[in-house]
Length: 611
Ligand SMILES: Cc1cc2nc3c(=O)[nH]c(=O)nc-3n(C[C@H](O)[C@H](O)[C@H](O)COP(=O)(O)OP(=O)(O)OC[C@H]3O[C@@H](n4cnc5c(N)ncnc54)[C@H](O)[C@@H]3O)c2cc1C
Image 1: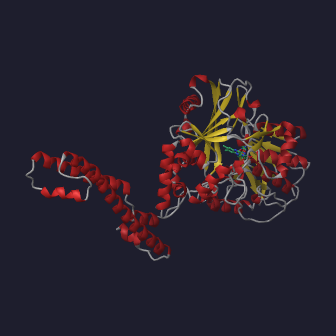
Image 2: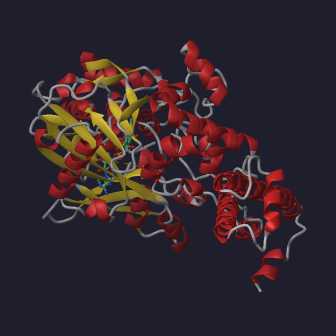
């Protein structure tokens, strides 16, 4: 148990840090919270511009954990509103239901597009891809390429910054499991949307809670309550080093802008700063291998362009997913629809344009006024608001908004955790503190259990599960992913596997059909015309025998046109059949090769072919 005279240090005044301090106050313990920013709330803050409030992405308050709801009440009482949810997909000037309902999509896209989608769906069913490895393969095999291109490709690539062909198929099967096309048509007709397992998907929740003045209100009030209790939140105070000795944390060095560094002696630290940064701050430093593991952790960043628009009602949605690829914006929030109190003037609207970026990339580095101009242009392109109605704007950049789950993060975390376990009194909490793609409730519960551990409990804070209430004290050291949001991972195509695919590359039947069709039709047309121009005496009199195969063909002007049309059709059919037959053989051979490969019988193929 901690020395009750020693100061407890909490790093970070986001939901995890402030909830930890709040729980400690309920246990009668004071703490000092160190926050590098000039605002509390972390990613769940609410920013303000000329009285207009906006979130870093709209933050729904939804949880299955009663204790989290209780804390929200303790902090904000009846300032928590229950809000209806409306969010749609915007594509090509039209709105579509989200999550996608195929019948709604087909009706909205119009008859021509519906036929194209139908044909590409049929094609995917008749000639499915031999292997479903990527997100793209998965969606195309279920819905056809056309639906994939319209509703899945652009947004997914905007958010994750990688091609759908490189995202693992597992992610699709987890996220889109309710969208079986035929089941979806039935559901659309009877008006219910359910998962394959008959449960309602979290993202479909029709109502959610929301603080009257945005999520920041929750965390600003929490800071004030803590201050009344005697736990101070030190703003603009960056932790630059966490000291430890003989297996115990001993102090934290912090610094405020322009001020000298200072040391706070402590034997208890709750850290919600990004685990990668924490490892860099440890003094003495961890072994090289642990530091390298920390450096392998990656993040995706985020920026919001807030625009104030002189229009009382632009659209009814809380947010809109932007699937159009002519703009870079990924999602647009309408904060007035989250809570009317987010805007001071009801004749105006505040939009939050969300861009998914990488720190230091082109968009991230644009000056604010250029980002505001870009947001204004994109709003006009989308037809959401005209540029001359935009009366103000502001930009917020949020580094490390998303911890990335790539091929190595689990291994790195395991290595980091097992080394950190040796340092008593240091607990890692929250989203980036634990490198977890979570919601606020998970961050809050890690803070609650870490606080209780300080007064003698023994919770495994790495195993906090907000899908089911976590009641028991456990000692499991397993990495749990419960409570995480779904994150795509990059597929790894082994070079040998890629080589096999290249060996059995397919021929496009439409391309070969078109080429052969054009060649046959034009040749027959020209041959007939030449015969006609030369007169009856020709060197190719037998050409008229083609009339036995092409209905109405003869050596006449009418026959030349018949030859062009029917020759093209025949050539197309021949080319298409040849390509399809070849592809069938290729597919059978490729499957045999994969089977042999999987059975370990093809060890030398790659090397042999490389020479
Ligand atoms: C676009 C988007 C939308 C989201 N929507 C929702 C939603 O609808 N509902 C929901 O529940 N959750 C949502 N989330 C998730 C939610 O924002 C997080 O789960 C939550 O904010 C994590 O809280 P935290 O305290 O763990 O971390 P953070 O919010 O990241 O807070 C960590 C704090 O530590 C501080 N810090 C870092 N380094 C140092 C240092 N060296 N010294 C001092 N301080 C430091 C940071 O400045 C920050 O204030 C969303 C997230 C994003 C990105």
